[in-house]
Amino acid sequence: MDEQHQLGPKVERSFELIGKRWTGLIIYVLLSGPKRFSEIHKIIPDLSKRMLTERMKELEDHGIVIRQIVKERPVRAEYLLTEKGLELGKILGPISQWGESWMSD
Image 1: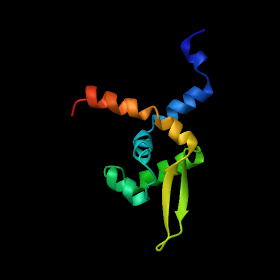
Image 2 (image 1 turned 135 degrees about the vertical axis):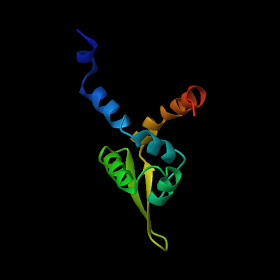
Image 3 (image 1 turned 180 degrees about the horizontal axis):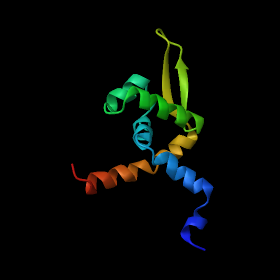
Image 4 (image 1 turned 60 degrees about the horizontal axis):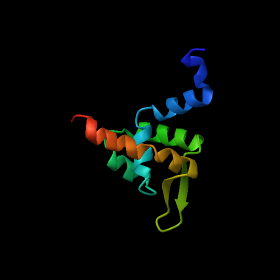
């Protein structure tokens, strides 16, 4: 049996999701705690608001991120990682360390 048939649909979908542009970086940013949409956009300025909206919706649909309403004045929404998202986030630390060591500017 060749490698393609051994992967399975769950593994393929996992790599497809985290391989999408900006997804890993968004999760990495949320590892430090809940953030408002504008905060995420400020931290990742090259990410357009349209694309951020799209990625946040995907991450919500996959149960990786939740949107939480904070009932302060003014009322605001924050995004935070679910348990599933935090578990996924554990692999991003080593990736960022690898990037610091091996990627050129």
